[in-house]
Image 1: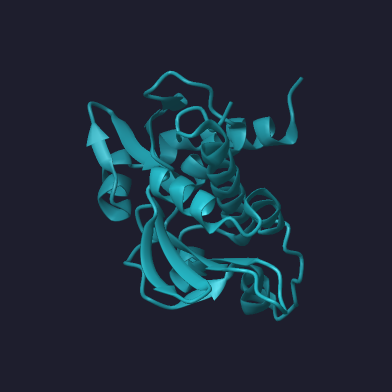
Image 2: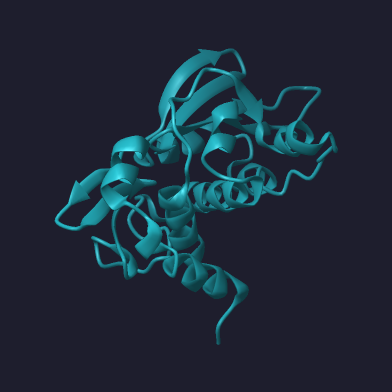
Length: 208
């Protein structure tokens, strides 16, 4: 049974013949190999041709992942990320001035890891994260989700007054490459990958 995500994907595939793959790879920091584009997303390698997205490891691929990769390839964005990160939930307010309080992306992480920072850090390393800063009760991690689109996580450990709090942040320039809805798909894939990596003990198979 075809879902809405399937329809989005097949609609994006129809746009691929209009895309100059070589130009896109140069602008987006990807690799052009024998008529196709190679891209790494959350530690997995994919090949994109005019027929769509295929995983190089032969494992299952979630439709959201396929959509994120095609949105990124078809993007007209250019330039380099700066160093101006904002909470993911704040992006709608930047766009429209409307507030957005839903923490649906971070609540699953807080439920999974609780106050177990060691468990979180082990999964983060396996998914390619780099710890940039650590203080008493606060840890900052960076993930290069896609070329041009880095993501940061702040892990605030629980104390006597507050529970564990996890914050996801994107550089403001992410909006040059994807609309908010697609960034939400991307962040959702990241959250799932981090949780599944902790569950399996390895990033392999996070989309199963």
